[in-house]
Each structure stands twice: as structure tokens, then as C-alpha cells.
Image (cartoon, rainbow, N blue to C red; front, top):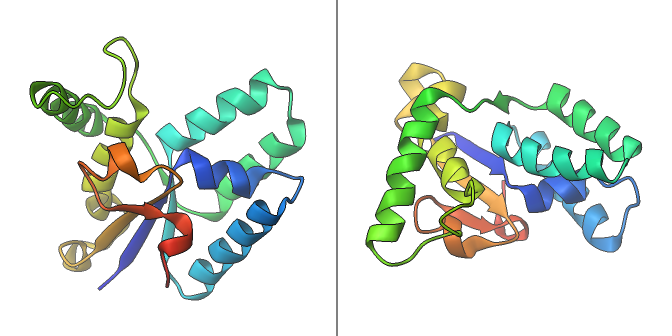
Length: 159
């Protein structure tokens, strides 16, 4: 079985932070351990967007450089029409259940990331292995994501 780990904005921010705090250092070691174990770690476009916009706003050029380097290191998972159609379904279901994941006027990156997780095996794993792939979102905020996809705190995901 293949393990696919999608990076949410929380761990992605830690990985791109050039000022290695204790948490950022731990996250970098965790990330390296996954790569060594040949886990497929992917960069979802929605997480890239969330981190990139803040790095640009704050003029954090070193962080942007690290984000661009990471984008060249791991598979990049683009937002597609299929992803957005699934995200709209998740968004509506959450509101119908009375448990929205964001304000009604918000873009709601969590449902977009959950939709990317649902569709990731077909994009990142060879066809014969896609059905058996386990997809996990590495995050710092499990609450909203876990309604639609497997999500764990990044430290709890092991190779």
C-alpha cells in the first residue's frame, strides 16, 4: 500500500520558515524521514497558495525561496475542475449538516484541500496502485479537515 501525505499550510509554513525554531526543526526532520522512507509527500496547490500569499505580503523572500525549492522537490497537486466540484459538494454538505468549516463568504481552503486528498491517488499513484493508496493530510488543525478526509497532526504521521 502506498502512503500519500498532503501538506497543509501549517506544516508547510514550518518547512519554509528559514528561521528554524524548535518546531520548524522537528518538522523538517519529520519531512526528511518521510522522504527517506519513500512516502509520497505532495504539495497541494491550495496549501501553496495559503502560505505563498502570506510570504509575499510580508516580503519574506527567503521563505518564498524555500517554498519554491520545496515545490521542485515533491509532487505538486494542482487544483482542477474536478477538485473544485468535489469541494463545492463538501462545502454544501457541511452547511446542510449545520457544521460549516468556514464563514459562508470565505473561500474555505479546508474543503478544497479535502477534495484534493480524495482525488490525489488518481493523480499521484500509478493506476494499478491507486485503489490501495492511503491518503493522509498532515496538518496542525485536524478539526475541519477530518470531516472529509483522513487528517492527522503532522507529528503523528509516521513512515
